[in-house]
Amino acid sequence: MEITLDNLAATEALAARLAALARPGDALLLEGPLGAGKSALARAFLRAAAADPALEVPSPTFTLVQSYDLPGGTAAHHFDLYRLTGPDGLLELGWDEARAGIVLVEWPERLGPLAPPGALRVALAPGPAEESRHARLSGWEDRL
View (cartoon, rainbow, N blue to C red):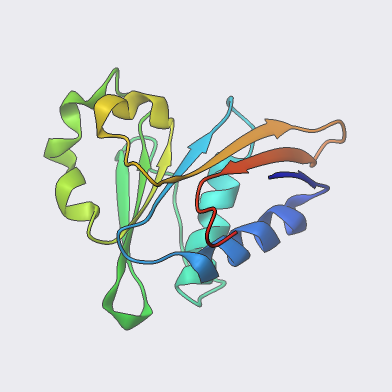
């Protein structure tokens, strides 16, 4: 599925729709170059999933993972793997435990063999206008 997102509001609307579809054990793999909107999509997803539009969602670029408690007892974990060279450090970050909840992963190519089968892949690319993006979604065929 391919979607053109005209502005940040459209990106946030897509993230809210995905948050409504996500279930414990799901993984969202956010692909794309720097500045493509991965963090913006993750931030909007987490705010929608937490039902808190003011939720503080810092980028996990330096901490590598940020965790959030969601309504209903589910947890969401936002991983930014940009600074990793491969999957070796993931176990130390609590990857196995995080998989019981919902995981959002920026730079998922660094997961290597730990990439979850059945994940939703969201490939983002800058669009022609300043805030526009192009999104290609694959996975979750039974839900999208």
